[in-house]
Amino acid sequence: VDPPTRLNGRWAVIMECVDGASARALLRAHGPMPVTVALEIVQEVARALDHVYHLPGPSGDALELVHRDLKPANLQLTAGGEVKILDFGTARARFEAREAETTRSIAGTYGYIAPERLHGVDTSAGDIYSLGMVLYRLLTARKADPRKLQQSLDDSKSALPELHKALALAKEMCAEEPEDRPTAREVERQCRRLRAEIDGPDLRMWSPDAVNPVVGMSEDELVGKTLSATFAMQTEEVSITCSRTSLLMLASLTGVNLILVVSAVAVVAIIALALVLWSLRAPSPVAAPEP
Image (cartoon, rainbow, N blue to C red; front, side, top):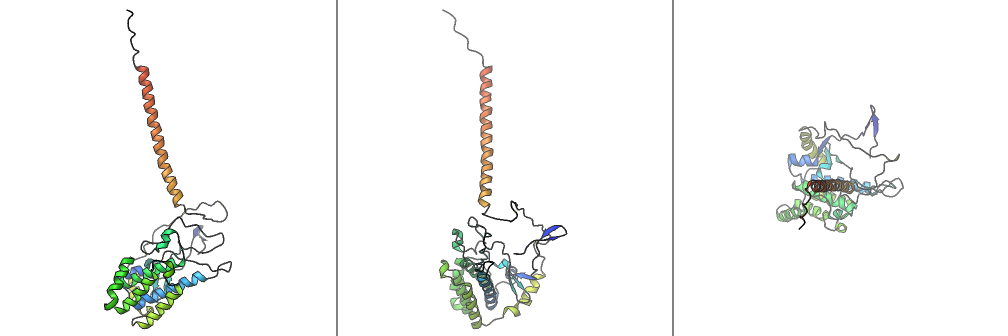
């Protein structure tokens, strides 16, 4: 996490500028990637995930950091063949008195979210599922969908044996049960083994011709936009204890209900006042004459 700094009297966050193109942009421009290139990208991401998960934290224990939103748009490739993982904004790790409770909100992108994360189970196996869907996307340029993955695996069995091997790894990574998926270190090892068995370009040779034209196509979509956020500072330390989504929804619903109650009371009061006025203005009944 990059700490904020002051520039010209305003708060700012200075981050590394990764000059390149996202895997999503490359898929749109070129279609499916070569099998060896897709495997090398996933190998590099798996190596990084294994590193940050086992990296010792301030207390000496493993950070157990998980990204929770792996997708082609969050993988940046440079013309020199480097792979950068972007957007750790929804990541979680083990910090003493710093970990946010995020069980009430689901982090991730549709199609890449592991099934167990929909039930609040958030482990490193969820990142492996997402990375498996990323591998499928890089190989086929199709939308992330486990049913389409199985179909592509069946179609490539006899016609495209090299693609079939890579898709079989993606299928294993996207197993329904978390315990049936390989670890990040196992994914790295399998990608390296498959690359040795398959002929094709490596990432370093493929990147210049693929990345440079895409980088020059258009400016970054965030250029010219103003990003802002407001935080309630109750103490000297910023502390987030739970997701505010449910609280905001409750407040919204309560506000709507309050308006309805006030409106109903006002209508009842008007009707009551009208009845009182009508009874005061109504003529008194004429008494019957004495016989």
